[in-house]
Image 1 (cartoon, rainbow over the protein chains, first blue to last red):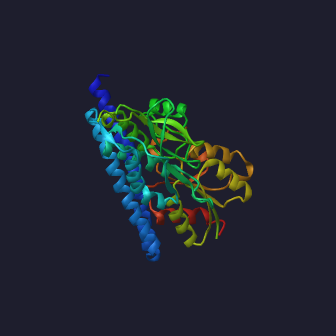
Image 2 (cartoon, each protein chain N blue to C red):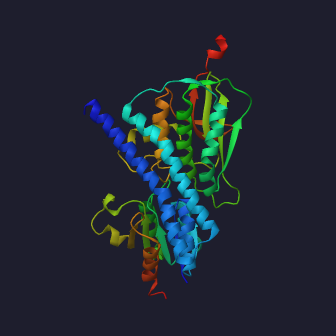
Image 3 (cartoon, each protein chain N blue to C red):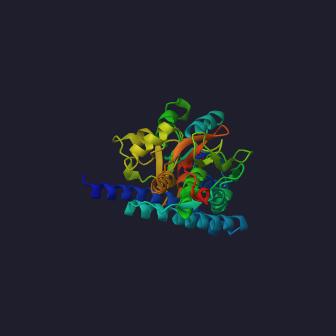
Length: 240
Length: 127
């Protein structure tokens, strides 16, 4: 297979996975609207429709960049970016979907960190994509204690700053499962068997992070499993 | 009124389907994965199972094989309500009948009314 065909194949698979994931909020809207028509609308049901519409729009927004990067195969321009700021924005972007799935989103940023070399909007899109997949895939919302998803930034012992999403109630994705999913991606419907859906958000995040010369990896933070990426601190301010 | 075991991993969809079934007069228990479904069925045998195939861990087909391996559950009707199109699943001819699949609903093309009608249809002998 030549390079162009291979690239188009990967883009096709990413598009397919994204389309599969976008079916979900649209199903929410369609079925909730039908239920409301059958029995008369209730405020909570209209809220569900609104939240699902917001979820779909948020997903499209986050996924578009990943699809564009997959199509163009380019690297993103990097600049000093505040991880705290991006994580804060991401938490806000995920809040409606988290609410719909009874998941609490927390920020875990201990202390102040120097900016990292990244692309701010792209990083937010990557973390949002990842967050959507993990929220939708978690399966314990009926338990009395609501699951908590933490968006965290911390300093890696080997250098660099890590930004990721963690949580005890989130589906655990091991390094082996992630590597296997990357090999199976495009060939099977459910490359991560620990997640019930296509996990499109994880692969979109992967694509975006690759364009920032980093990558998603299985990670642990305060004993909680999660997925994260490492970024290099910006040296620009240090020179000043 | 029937006891329905709804196996649906998506929390929002699970609530919608459960509500529709409850308003139709049924008692619904919702679980999100195959193991929880086996555990729940063990506590109280359902009259009908409504099953999504794309589950975390063991998929719906694996659950169905295990479910049917127990003699007390062999006659329980199972309705597939899945995001997986029936054409995507390659099966041995006759396997669907062997697994006792009473109806197959492809979520994007089906709706609540059709699902409720399938449930009523399989329950007719019980009612």
